[in-house]
Length: 170
Image (cartoon, rainbow, N blue to C red; front, side, top):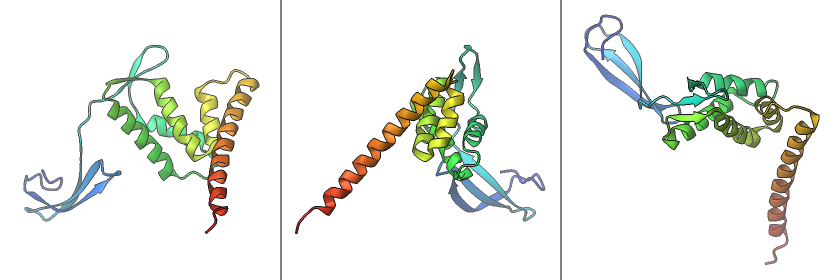
């Protein structure tokens, strides 16, 4: 690796650590010529994913754009930036694992909504309202009712499982 200080190709690794949930290796290096210490990052080179937008145009997947949408949806909610970044990482990993070089923008939106639904109901509804372009209050209310029903079912299942434990006899 070429030293950014003296431009000599004489550096060695002094420390390596996984970063970004194991997808990146962070390496601390030292130049054997001038002693300058610097950091490099090693990651798997992946083919870019092209996003097919609603109008048929294509653009390269932009994780910052996805993160901005999540940040807007989670504004003033108890959702950390770390949690939002993890959502973007999981969505990007899903896209990469599919093995396709192109993906419909709606699929990305669906993945984000699945993640937000598990994290924060309000952020989910905010994202869904923009993403699905709710035309009127009825469409919005239908989405809230579906989410409410899913939460009630989940809570009922959890309480039923918990109550079975309370009634066991020794």
